[in-house]
Image 1 (cartoon, helix red, strand yellow):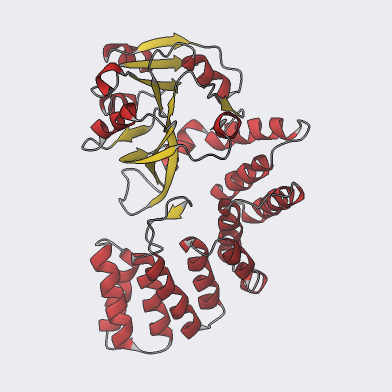
Image 2 (cartoon, helix red, strand yellow):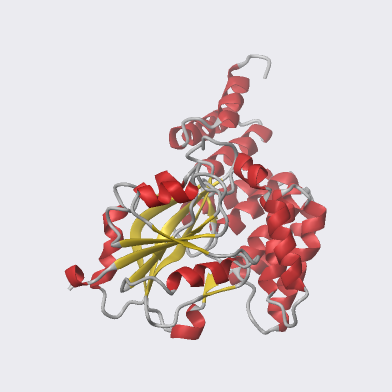
Length: 372
């Protein structure tokens, strides 16, 4: 019975006074204990955690996020573990649903919907990436974190390929990669230092190259990022594994950003053949056609994005690629084809779905201008 089960929150922190109160307040009433591992805070983080009833453990930082998280797991007494970052917040109206896993008998992993904001703070609600993410797991089964950075649970080692996962209707907001936060904490320098350290290890994981590509892409060093993402894809193939969809997303995002449209098409069709349900890949194909001035073909692809939608969160999905972003680019295509009425309708539909879409507003103003 659920009432006999306990849920533990586990978290690692360091100088997180900006978000930690909001984060803990979002779950403190639905968890039975809060285990916080502090790796060297010099601000009020520890004081805030204790004031909210958390148990704070001190751990010497050794450039290893997994080790710090695993240290906290050793003290958790709950039957289930919820893990969060200090710059994450659970949606208030969803929080109680976290306890739904406690009544599960055959499920060992619980997913939530992670909403990763990007851009400036305070956040624009439509500037986000969405994905279902493992954030709850049954305690005392051998689940542990691995990898020094971008740590993951050892799900494959514990339960293999058997599907023991349930997706809960719980939204978690992540603010940690907003522009001002990454600059303030100099996350790029920290992350690349650890990743380069890991790259020297024998039989390194292809994910290291992906994360390095992602770091350089985030810093807008696109040409530096591209060899890393290609290397990651090749390493998965050499291991006789299908490269995860996330890698192809980043590859074609880089190519589109660099406007290497000829290099991106028709190669992107091979990635789409592997992941035909991944709306982001379809969206990039539409952008490639738009860049190659194949406007009618682009419209067809963007319309297919609308059909796919953006609810398949097994893939990392940019918010809007199956809705308002697709409509915006449909409008651009019709504009290029000098079909003003169709363009107007597309931009208006975009604004109905995303009320503050500045580019759509500007396009409508241009269409209304008699000198357009």
